[in-house]
Image (cartoon, rainbow, N blue to C red; front, top):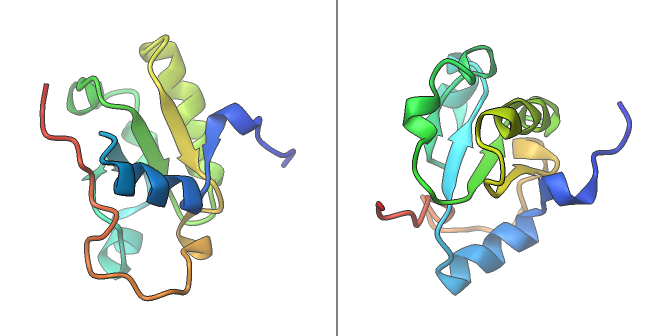
Amino acid sequence: MPHAPAELELSWADLRRWKEEGRPYLLVDVREAWERERSHIGGIWVPLGEITQKTIELGVSAPLVVYCRKGVRSLIAVQRLQARFPGRLMRSLAGGMESLPEETLEPGYFLSVYHGD
């Protein structure tokens, strides 16, 4: 798969910076149920196959940070969602859960800081 355009991806370092700056965002996990049961960083769960049908859950105005295992499905989800939410800031978490930084973080560190509209 060709490399994704930089404007569609967000690195773990950038996500950490967003968190530390208190920027609002909504995490969206697009993996399968069994993957989420093994580990996740929070947010709402909408499998990739349902992403265009469950847009009511994504109707908040906060930027979306979409993640999966390797960053491929999340990039597909972002591309599909751009058609539903034109102009909305959304990013695929580059590298997905497989590239989660090794450093120890407290549980729930990356949980969304979105607090509602």
